[in-house]
Length: 104
Image 1 (cartoon, rainbow, N blue to C red):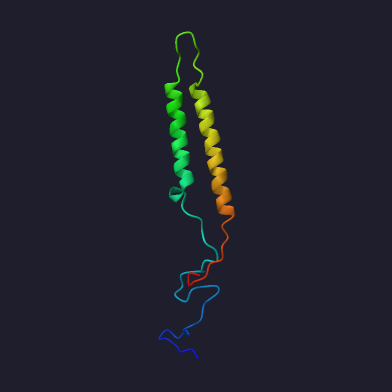
Image 2: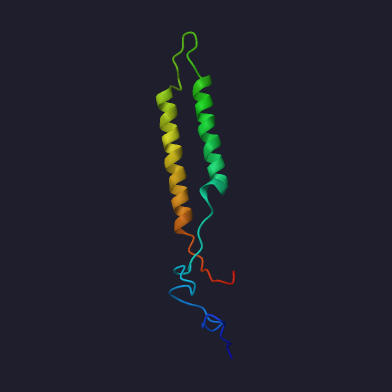
């Protein structure tokens, strides 16, 4: 038997389309972690810094050309960025876990 609370809605029931308090619909699936909380973000930042440092350190020596010019370094950074964006997209596409209000 359910008892009525002072607002008139029986306790022990769940709403399916809108919350009783008028806050909108409830979530049906979980979200992935924020991008700033993942290890792939920190690996991406470290790889970009490593490419920039390597490009700065590898320079023109006597009798040799510059093997790792800035345009090549920026191309590698773009490739790293595309890879990072793809990995985040794959992480978000595979995160459709069921979600219910009691946390299980």
